[in-house]
Length: 424
Ligand SMILES: C[S@@+](CC[C@H](N)C(=O)[O-])C[C@H]1O[C@@H](n2cnc3c(N)ncnc32)[C@H](O)[C@@H]1O
Ligand code: SF4
Image: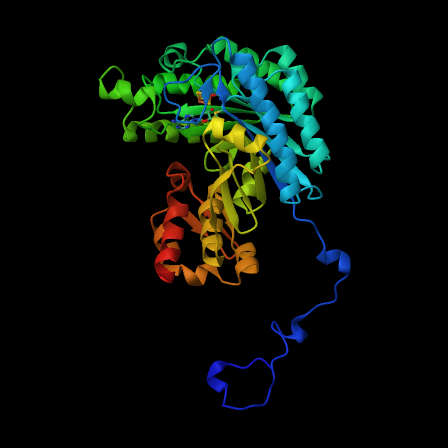
């Protein structure tokens, strides 16, 4: 019998056979125990048409004579990695629920490249009818490319638009123009079930007028999904160098906050609702399985140079040196370079930090998974966040308010921080 520690008297009676105790067990069938864990697949394509001034991603421009050779070699290596890593980690039978080609700019690849990769995926993994996203830069999305994407089963296209104001685009050193972007959006809409466009809030030269113009134009395309990233300034970017030499200026944090506030109002007016604090979709539908399931803890195997993912208790990342990646894979070595084993506390904190990105957090699922009631563990923190109007807490959910959405990861970091402090 389960007894309170305070009621226990020293005794040699009452041998423990198991825990949880048998009386807590329920009738089950063996099929219920063998469910294969679902899997997400990420493929990194580290090439772009140009290097955008604000971009901090690990990517190189495809220029010069060796352009084709470089890309061909990378794609062949990626296919080989798919083969050796799937075998090594026994991924073959796990149902793939989402495929995501990210970058860089995956649409710099041609039909032959895409076909080769798809063949490797089908030969080595269990792919039936997953959500299938490809990131694209508008200038690369021709009607022919779109046909290729449709042929291989892509059902979601995510276009990096950033701005629809030509003066702002020019300062970004992109090959796109507003017209090209709008044309690519049209092509994408005729190709995939769901089209997402990325916008960047806080670009150089942006004013409320130009930002509001971009938002209105973006909404007028009626795409299913609009993602707004806050432009983050990194030291490895052209923006950073230009700002330091006073050649350009970016909006202050306060002004950027006004831009985002305006965006929230416009989205609400047009019934684009958040399913994450930075992605707004028609009626809040079209949740992106790739992102939301990773945040909820589904494994993601990531192929390609510098790609990072998770398997069970492990987080891992491939080497970020392209030559090394190619040499390792072609000598049949898994190119993983670093990783982190997550203990139960890491996993619990991760589930809050990433889970709060979804703007709504399921408290019952948390308790079912970790056994703890978050409302008890973090009651003061939850009260503070609620008092400051970042969240609303009910019995079942934590929901971000508009102020919470505006401050992005702050709520998740604050909650996770209180849990860390509690346990350390
Ligand atoms: C890997 S890119 C994929 C799209 C494609 N390469 C393009 O730019 O058209 C993904 C997104 O990252 C975002 N991004 C790039 N640099 C950023 C920065 N400094 N801060 C915040 N977001 C950034 C952009 O909005 C971009 O669309
Ligand atoms: S924003 Fe996109 S196109 Fe520009 S450099 Fe970054 S990944 Fe490449």
